[in-house]
Image 1 (cartoon, one colour):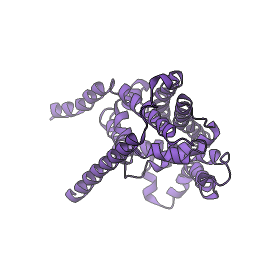
Image 2 (tube, rainbow, N blue to C red):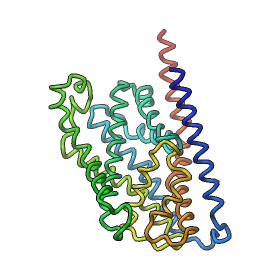
Image 3 (tube, rainbow, N blue to C red):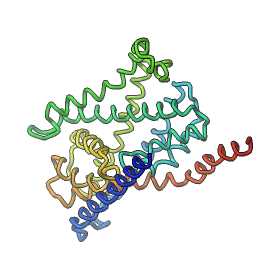
Length: 312
């Protein structure tokens, strides 16, 4: 157990180091003389902030609230909103986005939900988000120019497979008759059904669109002429690559990847600026807003422990 913990800490430290080094290199490559506020179209940045806050906080909360309701683990929307807000920073700035585990822990401690069910629902929510991301990758790949890496059949097949993955869960009740361990899963005993799965997949796709919109608006702010439909493939691909546990959710890698993969970004300096604005509007601002709910969430996490001590 101690070895596993040591390896995890080592991996986490390496992720911070890799992201830190990459970010320093990225910042050093920017011509700051051209990165002047007077040259930016701040209206686009303001709209990007509103879209990001709306998607990462309110839409994400509604999506999770709906999933909890449909799996008979209902939690009031305001408390789901507090949960999402309080843990945004942990979600965005941890390796492999492992901060999502804290959502399950909070559901178990604060809302008194069964631990296995809480982890299962959070995993299902993440699966829906990944499927929405791969669906956008597939759609966007159809609009990329000939010869673009992401326009190959491999990425289109990946997009299709990821999009239909949630519908495999519809067969869990049948599989549970053969494999007993599946019967303990909530989605096997209480299946979502096709239309609920479609609704959640649609919400997840819209949720992931906030990243696409953030990049598109950031490109308009710095003057890069990027076609929106081409961003549909490039941005989801970068989001998926950011899940590889070698950086902190892609920090330091998103910016050069964006400069390399965007078909319309001929100016490296402007493309890197676009990536930095994407980081600011889509990750930093929502995380800062989330700190408002953190004290209340921490107090709620402490209450169950105090109640247990009082009972003993």
